[in-house]
Amino acid sequence: MKCIVFIFAQQNNLFHCFCSGGTLTLEDLASYQANVTDAWNISLGEYRMYFPPPPLGGAILSFILNIMKGNALLFSNSQYFTQMAKNLTEDSFADNIRSLISSDKTHDRQYYGDTPCLDSIGTTHVSVLAEDGSAVSVTSTINDEFGSKVLSPSTGIILNNQLFDFCNRANRTSHGRRSEGGLWERPPSNMAPSVLKSPSKTLVIGGSGAEMIPPAVASVCMHGIRTQVFCSIQVFLLFALQDVVDGLEAKGHKITQFYNTVNAVEKAGSCISAWSDKRKKGEPAGY
Image 1 (cartoon, rainbow, N blue to C red):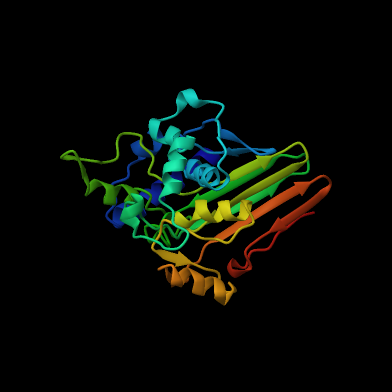
Image 2 (image 1 turned 90 degrees about the vertical axis):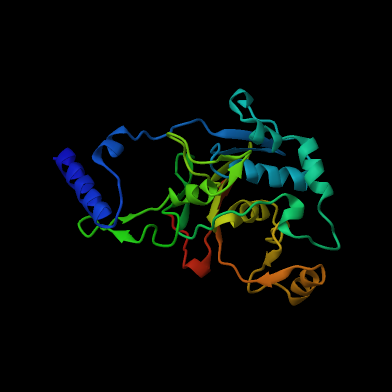
C-alpha cells in the first residue's frame, strides 16, 4: 500500500511539474540516489567539529574559524579532498586572506577575490539533541522563496528549484569554455549544519540565510558580532549598538538590514540550553 501511495504521489508531482513547463520524468526519480557520506571533522580547541563535505558550506565555516583563531585545522580523511577544499584548511591560505583584511577600511568584493553568488531564502534549520546523547543538525531548503512556485495540490508539496543554482554559473566561461553542471553533480550550497563535541560539552548548531549562514554560525560559535567582512554591504541586528553601526559606516561599509537565523542546542554536563531566533517565531522544545 505504501508503494502505491508513493507512486501516486510521484505521478501527481510530475503532472504538476509538466503543467508548469518542467521536464522531470519517472525515470529521473527512479535513477536518483541519495549521496550518503561520512562527515568531515576538524580539531577546534577542546572540540571536534563535524559537518557535511562540499558542496555544502561546512568547509567555509571552518575556514572562517581558522582565520579568526589562526590555528591549523586538520581533517581526518584528507585523501578525499579536492584541492580547493584543502586550501581552506591551510594556514598559508588563511594568512593570505587575513592580509587582505584592513581594520580601518573596507574594499569592494573584487578586492577580496569574490564572485557573485545566488541568494537562497527558502531555508530552515533544526538542531536536535536526544535523550541518549545523539545529536542531529539538519538544514533543509527549497532554494528560493517558495522554491519553483509550483505546489502539488494532491500532496501539498512545494517543488524546489535547486537546479537554478547552475543557471548563473552556466553563463560564465572559464578559459573559453562554459562551466555547467555535470552528470550527478549537486548544486553548491551555503548550508553548514554542524555538531561540536568535547569531553564535557556538545553543541548542535546551524542556520538559514543564504551566504550569511557560515559567517553567522561562526560568529555564534565565537560569541562575536555577526558580520561579513568580504561583503561591501554590512549586515547588522536591529538591536545593534548605534556606535557599532557608526563605526562600520566610518570604515566605508554600507549598512542594510538582512534576515538570517541561527539556532543551537548545547549540553554542558547535565545542563541543556537551547536557543531559537524569535524573529522567526522559533521556540525551543523539550520533554
